[in-house]
Image (cartoon, rainbow, N blue to C red; front, top):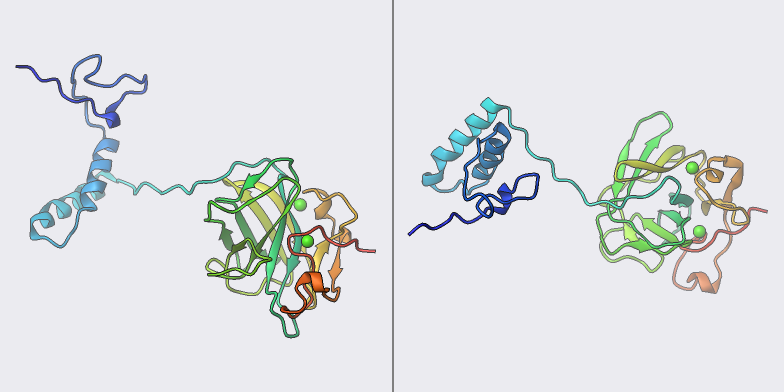
Length: 253
Ligand SMILES: [Ca+2]
Ligand SMILES: [Ca+2]
Protein backbone atom coordinates (compact mmCIF):
# COMPACT_ATOMS: atom_id res chain seq x y z
CA UNK A 1 0.00 0.00 0.00
CA UNK A 2 1.32 3.44 -0.91
CA UNK A 3 1.23 5.94 1.91
CA UNK A 4 1.77 9.52 0.82
CA UNK A 5 4.29 11.45 2.81
CA UNK A 6 2.70 13.99 5.12
CA UNK A 7 3.04 17.53 3.86
CA UNK A 8 5.52 19.44 5.93
CA UNK A 9 4.25 23.03 6.55
CA UNK A 10 7.84 24.17 6.81
CA UNK A 11 8.43 23.02 3.27
CA UNK A 12 5.61 24.84 1.54
CA UNK A 13 6.99 26.60 -1.49
CA UNK A 14 6.57 30.33 -2.14
CA UNK A 15 3.50 29.79 -4.34
CA UNK A 16 1.66 28.41 -1.32
CA UNK A 17 1.57 24.84 -2.58
CA UNK A 18 2.53 22.19 -0.10
CA UNK A 19 4.71 19.33 -1.09
CA UNK A 20 2.71 16.11 -0.91
CA UNK A 21 -0.68 17.77 -1.30
CA UNK A 22 -0.59 18.54 -4.98
CA UNK A 23 2.51 16.86 -6.25
CA UNK A 24 3.21 14.01 -3.85
CA UNK A 25 6.43 14.18 -1.95
CA UNK A 26 9.36 15.52 -3.94
CA UNK A 27 12.49 16.08 -1.97
CA UNK A 28 14.03 19.35 -3.03
CA UNK A 29 17.67 20.22 -3.04
CA UNK A 30 18.94 21.19 0.40
CA UNK A 31 20.22 24.74 0.26
CA UNK A 32 23.04 26.00 2.51
CA UNK A 33 20.37 28.06 4.38
CA UNK A 34 18.31 24.92 5.07
CA UNK A 35 21.38 23.13 6.30
CA UNK A 36 22.31 26.03 8.56
CA UNK A 37 18.85 26.03 10.15
CA UNK A 38 19.03 22.28 10.76
CA UNK A 39 22.50 22.59 12.24
CA UNK A 40 21.40 25.39 14.57
CA UNK A 41 18.61 23.19 15.89
CA UNK A 42 20.99 20.32 16.34
CA UNK A 43 23.31 22.53 18.35
CA UNK A 44 20.44 23.42 20.64
CA UNK A 45 20.02 19.81 21.74
CA UNK A 46 20.98 19.12 25.37
CA UNK A 47 24.70 18.71 25.61
CA UNK A 48 24.70 16.69 28.81
CA UNK A 49 24.52 13.28 27.16
CA UNK A 50 27.46 11.59 25.57
CA UNK A 51 25.07 10.39 22.81
CA UNK A 52 24.63 13.96 21.58
CA UNK A 53 28.21 15.05 21.93
CA UNK A 54 29.47 13.92 18.55
CA UNK A 55 26.56 15.33 16.46
CA UNK A 56 26.78 18.63 18.32
CA UNK A 57 30.52 18.85 17.69
CA UNK A 58 30.00 17.95 14.04
CA UNK A 59 27.21 20.54 13.74
CA UNK A 60 29.48 23.21 15.17
CA UNK A 61 32.26 22.37 12.74
CA UNK A 62 29.92 22.24 9.74
CA UNK A 63 28.27 25.53 10.77
CA UNK A 64 31.64 27.21 10.95
CA UNK A 65 32.59 25.70 7.56
CA UNK A 66 29.36 26.92 5.94
CA UNK A 67 29.58 30.35 7.52
CA UNK A 68 26.18 29.94 9.23
CA UNK A 69 24.98 32.97 11.10
CA UNK A 70 22.72 32.70 14.13
CA UNK A 71 19.26 33.90 13.12
CA UNK A 72 18.55 37.04 15.14
CA UNK A 73 15.44 37.16 17.29
CA UNK A 74 13.31 40.07 16.19
CA UNK A 75 11.46 42.01 18.87
CA UNK A 76 7.83 42.64 18.15
CA UNK A 77 7.26 46.30 17.48
CA UNK A 78 4.52 48.79 16.80
CA UNK A 79 4.79 50.68 13.51
CA UNK A 80 4.35 54.41 14.05
CA UNK A 81 4.47 57.41 11.78
CA UNK A 82 6.86 60.27 12.33
CA UNK A 83 5.53 62.45 15.15
CA UNK A 84 2.87 60.00 16.37
CA UNK A 85 4.56 59.81 19.77
CA UNK A 86 6.53 62.80 21.08
CA UNK A 87 8.47 63.91 24.14
CA UNK A 88 6.45 66.14 26.46
CA UNK A 89 8.11 66.30 29.91
CA UNK A 90 11.28 65.08 31.67
CA UNK A 91 12.04 64.70 35.35
CA UNK A 92 15.67 64.16 36.32
CA UNK A 93 17.58 63.74 39.57
CA UNK A 94 16.28 66.07 42.27
CA UNK A 95 18.41 68.08 44.69
CA UNK A 96 16.14 67.64 47.69
CA UNK A 97 14.28 64.75 49.22
CA UNK A 98 12.21 63.17 46.50
CA UNK A 99 9.90 60.19 46.16
CA UNK A 100 8.46 60.90 42.70
CA UNK A 101 11.54 59.62 40.91
CA UNK A 102 12.89 60.23 37.45
CA UNK A 103 10.71 59.76 34.39
CA UNK A 104 10.14 60.52 30.72
CA UNK A 105 6.65 61.53 29.63
CA UNK A 106 5.46 60.95 26.05
CA UNK A 107 2.37 62.25 24.26
CA UNK A 108 0.29 60.42 21.67
CA UNK A 109 -0.51 63.06 19.04
CA UNK A 110 -2.85 60.74 17.11
CA UNK A 111 -6.53 60.08 17.68
CA UNK A 112 -6.06 56.35 18.22
CA UNK A 113 -4.56 54.18 20.94
CA UNK A 114 -0.89 53.23 20.49
CA UNK A 115 0.76 50.12 21.89
CA UNK A 116 4.23 50.85 23.20
CA UNK A 117 5.52 47.33 22.71
CA UNK A 118 8.97 47.58 21.17
CA UNK A 119 9.06 51.37 21.30
CA UNK A 120 12.63 52.37 22.02
CA UNK A 121 14.00 55.53 23.62
CA UNK A 122 17.60 56.19 22.65
CA UNK A 123 19.53 58.46 25.03
CA UNK A 124 22.89 60.15 24.43
CA UNK A 125 24.74 62.98 26.07
CA UNK A 126 25.36 65.88 23.71
CA UNK A 127 29.04 64.87 23.44
CA UNK A 128 27.83 61.51 22.08
CA UNK A 129 28.78 59.49 25.16
CA UNK A 130 26.53 57.42 27.41
CA UNK A 131 24.34 56.06 24.63
CA UNK A 132 21.67 53.70 25.92
CA UNK A 133 18.35 52.24 24.75
CA UNK A 134 15.23 51.92 26.82
CA UNK A 135 12.97 49.31 25.20
CA UNK A 136 9.35 48.84 26.21
CA UNK A 137 8.94 45.07 26.49
CA UNK A 138 5.50 44.98 28.10
CA UNK A 139 2.73 44.36 25.56
CA UNK A 140 0.12 45.69 27.99
CA UNK A 141 1.52 49.24 27.94
CA UNK A 142 -0.38 51.54 25.63
CA UNK A 143 -1.48 55.15 25.45
CA UNK A 144 -4.83 56.51 24.29
CA UNK A 145 -5.07 59.09 21.54
CA UNK A 146 -4.05 62.58 22.69
CA UNK A 147 -3.04 61.24 26.07
CA UNK A 148 0.20 60.88 28.00
CA UNK A 149 2.29 57.91 29.10
CA UNK A 150 5.09 57.93 31.68
CA UNK A 151 8.23 55.78 31.59
CA UNK A 152 9.83 55.88 35.04
CA UNK A 153 13.17 54.78 36.44
CA UNK A 154 11.58 51.97 38.41
CA UNK A 155 11.43 48.21 38.37
CA UNK A 156 8.98 45.85 39.96
CA UNK A 157 5.85 47.41 41.38
CA UNK A 158 5.24 50.83 39.87
CA UNK A 159 3.89 53.95 41.56
CA UNK A 160 0.53 55.21 40.30
CA UNK A 161 2.05 57.95 38.12
CA UNK A 162 4.31 55.54 36.15
CA UNK A 163 3.10 53.30 33.30
CA UNK A 164 6.34 51.46 32.53
CA UNK A 165 9.53 50.99 34.54
CA UNK A 166 12.80 51.27 32.60
CA UNK A 167 15.38 50.78 35.36
CA UNK A 168 16.51 47.42 33.98
CA UNK A 169 17.61 49.19 30.78
CA UNK A 170 18.87 52.46 32.25
CA UNK A 171 19.51 52.92 35.95
CA UNK A 172 21.59 56.13 35.75
CA UNK A 173 20.28 59.63 36.26
CA UNK A 174 18.77 61.23 33.16
CA UNK A 175 21.49 63.32 31.54
CA UNK A 176 21.62 67.06 32.21
CA UNK A 177 22.16 67.80 28.48
CA UNK A 178 21.16 65.19 25.97
CA UNK A 179 19.57 64.12 22.75
CA UNK A 180 16.64 61.73 23.10
CA UNK A 181 15.05 59.84 20.23
CA UNK A 182 11.95 57.67 19.98
CA UNK A 183 12.15 54.73 17.59
CA UNK A 184 9.39 52.34 16.53
CA UNK A 185 10.39 49.36 14.38
CA UNK A 186 13.73 51.14 13.91
CA UNK A 187 12.04 54.21 12.39
CA UNK A 188 12.65 57.57 14.04
CA UNK A 189 9.40 58.96 15.49
CA UNK A 190 10.59 62.00 17.48
CA UNK A 191 13.79 63.65 18.59
CA UNK A 192 14.50 66.10 21.38
CA UNK A 193 17.65 68.04 22.23
CA UNK A 194 17.64 69.69 25.64
CA UNK A 195 20.01 71.49 27.99
CA UNK A 196 20.02 72.01 31.75
CA UNK A 197 17.59 69.43 33.02
CA UNK A 198 16.48 70.99 36.31
CA UNK A 199 17.25 69.46 39.72
CA UNK A 200 14.05 70.97 41.10
CA UNK A 201 10.89 69.94 39.26
CA UNK A 202 10.59 69.02 35.60
CA UNK A 203 11.51 70.27 32.15
CA UNK A 204 8.14 70.60 30.48
CA UNK A 205 6.85 71.56 27.04
CA UNK A 206 4.63 74.64 27.27
CA UNK A 207 1.11 73.35 28.02
CA UNK A 208 -0.47 76.31 26.23
CA UNK A 209 1.05 75.31 22.86
CA UNK A 210 0.23 72.53 20.43
CA UNK A 211 2.68 69.72 21.07
CA UNK A 212 4.16 68.11 17.97
CA UNK A 213 7.44 66.53 16.94
CA UNK A 214 8.36 69.88 15.37
CA UNK A 215 7.16 72.28 18.07
CA UNK A 216 9.05 70.36 20.77
CA UNK A 217 12.32 70.93 18.87
CA UNK A 218 12.28 74.57 19.92
CA UNK A 219 13.89 74.90 23.33
CA UNK A 220 12.08 78.20 23.89
CA UNK A 221 8.86 76.16 24.01
CA UNK A 222 10.06 74.39 27.17
CA UNK A 223 10.31 75.64 30.74
CA UNK A 224 10.91 74.42 34.26
CA UNK A 225 7.83 73.34 36.19
CA UNK A 226 8.76 73.64 39.87
CA UNK A 227 5.21 74.08 41.11
CA UNK A 228 4.60 72.98 44.68
CA UNK A 229 2.41 69.87 44.82
CA UNK A 230 -1.24 70.07 45.63
CA UNK A 231 -3.35 67.47 47.41
CA UNK A 232 -4.43 66.16 43.99
CA UNK A 233 -0.78 65.45 43.15
CA UNK A 234 -0.59 62.98 46.03
CA UNK A 235 1.28 65.59 48.06
CA UNK A 236 0.33 63.94 51.32
CA UNK A 237 2.26 60.77 50.52
CA UNK A 238 4.86 61.89 47.95
CA UNK A 239 7.71 64.30 48.54
CA UNK A 240 9.15 66.61 45.90
CA UNK A 241 8.08 68.84 43.03
CA UNK A 242 6.10 66.48 40.82
CA UNK A 243 5.50 68.33 37.56
CA UNK A 244 2.52 66.81 35.75
CA UNK A 245 3.17 63.10 35.08
CA UNK A 246 0.50 61.65 32.79
CA UNK A 247 -1.28 65.02 32.47
CA UNK A 248 -1.14 68.02 30.17
CA UNK A 249 1.69 70.35 31.19
CA UNK A 250 1.14 73.72 32.81
CA UNK A 251 1.53 76.80 30.63
CA UNK A 252 5.04 78.28 30.77
CA UNK A 253 3.82 81.81 31.44
CA1 LIG B 1 11.04 66.73 18.06
CA1 LIG C 1 2.91 66.33 31.81
